[in-house]
Image 1: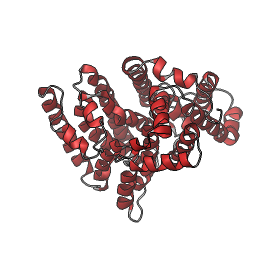
Image 2 (image 1 turned 90 degrees about the horizontal axis):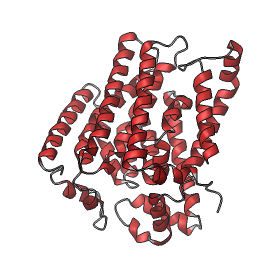
Image 3 (image 1 turned 120 degrees about the horizontal axis):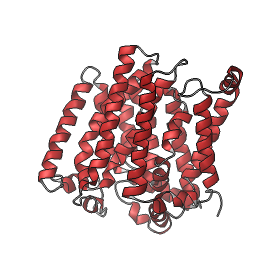
Image 4 (image 1 turned 90 degrees about the vertical axis):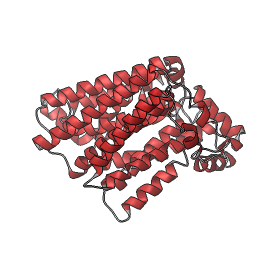
Length: 383
């Protein structure tokens, strides 16, 4: 797995160095044309395959072992409000599927849906995966359910970006289904404000301000969100202890993800303004995606009070970073000489990726519990 991880890095760098739409451009014109015509899709496919194998290699991580035990012995643990995950798990177990194969199948199917949506928006994966590999890959390998839900959440963006019949209803249904795998994703219903085209930014700003007020109240309340446990219990089963165990008094550790997300939001705002003011050549779908992204970034600030209580609640903020990477990638899709703003955006993304690495792999967890289980893992199809 170490070799696969290194190979993924090398392929990302090859894509970044050779592709005309990216930051760097080396080699002869013929070499670059050959890359564009014949090998871009191949490199992209191999990259995605390597990431899939790495995501499903973890067999010794604490969270993964808990998932395996629940899959094998504790089916009653799934009788909560995350019912869809329970139904799928029980069905796979009764069909004789090992947990490792079950995880791989669910990861693959939901990943394909996310990849399809991202491709429809118009994104090259060499750029995106370059920022995914440092820490997000290890976290998603450990937090199985959250990774599955994040893929489905990305897939649901098609109902926000591509106007179609009953798009609003489809998005709501999609989120309600995702929430049956992980109750945290009920929060994504807040993105329905995006359907109010003339008022969505104003509503998002109002939610942002409400989040800041609640954060102030939370600080005065000893880093405890008022009535949090009561609200959490509306979405959790009576036997689910997360509403209590996650409602613990936090410390100043919450300032790190909050600061990273603030920087991410400012970067998104800068990219949006630059695209509109300089009339950068991007598609209408990509313009809508940037609008959606900024609205989502603002809404996410309402989760800061929960992060003050316990860092487990920063998962959606962390997931939003990769969505912002997708948005920034639009600056590099046009052929031609890169401008300073592109270099600046790339540098800021690199800084943010490094900060997430420090938070996820160094501070919040450590390399032994997060990275080593992946790099010392083995393919899902081996016993």
